[in-house]
Length: 286
Image (tube, rainbow, N blue to C red; front, side, top):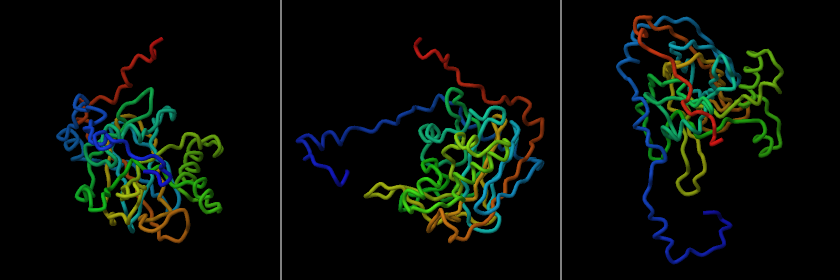
């Protein structure tokens, strides 16, 4: 309730509040996560690329369809902000809002990352997560959220009247601009809401404000994805470090993140097909 609420509750207020909950999307008709397939595919991997993302910076990487990629904590507790694009058309990119509607506010093994409309398809599948033990804590927090946006210089300036250039939004913008070889102003509109890798977040129970707490990630922990299409990834090592205290400044200890790309045996992918575009006819009733 807003602190500026002016209206008394009506006589049937409690009855209205007792309306039953309905899950917005019945997702049982979506293809089931094929655990056995992904486990076979990841059983014998060959590393084909590695990228180190420096603290308070971002880097890009490419993952061909049918390959795996891992994001790993290598030196200390560190959160990452991940953008994903169709490597052949950056107009198609990760859609965090639809991902949380189809799965949950936080994602882990078996969940998919979905792209924006009109493609709206699974572009990556989470196949392994060493933090899957965390679950939900007593504060209502969990790991790997798709509810936060990304720290950005505009909000930071609005709240603190200072310019800080190493927020995740700026990091992602610089890295995407470098990859595309275009000015930052041209790349920035493509930067989108992120998967907050390793970030531990929730909502305060009484005020319902978004909160963060120190990530449980430790060196050696990783989250792994299977590329359902050709992917371009851009990952920022957040200036908030483990996001247990602050972000958008240089005060918090920060560490690099490692991205590794792996090729699976061709035999295991013999019957696999990449994700098809959404089947809607696009007519919108006309």
